[in-house]
Length: 185
Image (cartoon, rainbow, N blue to C red):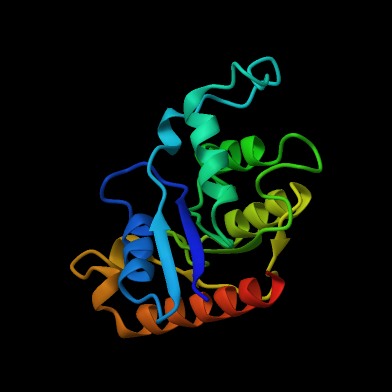
């Protein structure tokens, strides 16, 4: 049985180090694990209950919900913006949390990792992303963590895919996420 993981990147910047980190996951997914990088978070309107109406749901939000329902787990990549989770990632979690108790993220196995310029690698934002996903109903792997500090310097001349320590850490996260998701299915 193959485990399907959807990667959501909390940075919209084309050259984002977190997007590059997601590329590491795509390239190094172990056998039996399929990882898809979700495109389209920028098109999703900010969550508004007035928009969340059956039959008139904004197409980008409906597409995200459908994509999440089709996978076994989510791997969230979060940079840190002003000490917290980026709005685009929080917005995705908000859309996935509804309807309350039945949202697309309910019961999904979720891990959160990332990189940031600061000395702690974005741990505050990653903790906030874990909290939001857990409250939304996800089965968050609280002990699966990878926070890579100093991204601007560390990845100035090197893509994370060429950093053996980063690759090893990402592979370990994927293995834990996929094995947990497989046993939960």
